[in-house]
Length: 343
Image (cartoon, rainbow, N blue to C red; front, side, top):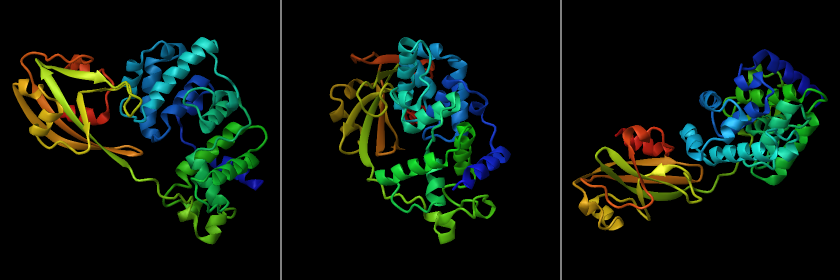
């Protein structure tokens, strides 16, 4: 085990990608990159990272922003609770910590949206704390290196991975080791088709000796997705559309959408919409069904049906905002709604 850190850091120095958040020890930029990269590919996340820094170059700029502005920039990344949490954290640090991030992983985890991995990453990369940062890539590397065959969803396996990560962590430069482990998982020890033939840790890899590296880490099947049916009436009058902000503690909180009737099935025609939106559709000058769409989330499948109705006068819709097409571009909205609008 002692030779693993040296080998993997040496590999990293020769193979590391040039990523912008690796060129700084600024906790604000490191924190921003870590939150953006959760459940997000590096290529996509890099564009959002630059976009956020362009709009909010300093923490106090972000803390002063509105939720609508932040979610508008976040649009397309999904998991919108991350966007809401970065605003909460920015405001909390600005108001309660004099604009300075806590320096320990333990204290960082007390902030909204920062869990064990993110707290360890910020503390290690920004402040040099000797703590192992265990993300999905590192979990995979450790499971394969030590042939851990338990279900990766089990707390016992997760605890063992954290223990091994701490044992591997060398004295001194935690930044290089943590970056190396994550990069190794992303580039060398990949989820499928790992580059075992060129792996510098081939002799140390217990799962390769057993021929089971392609089967690890083992993850049991997740619970089936829940299917929900969102039936939207898209009301339009003189080029303006009626939208409301979702305030419920549910998916897409803080994003804008048309009139919604959630049901146990998908509406397939105007008669069902007439029942779902009584006394509204009959006032429309014209209406047409748009092609249905589906949106796959981590634990849900959203089936969307839309009836586009045009009105000569704006109907009374308390809580809704009439927005021009130009204004729609600025509002935060679900990606699936953006697809609908293009039609």
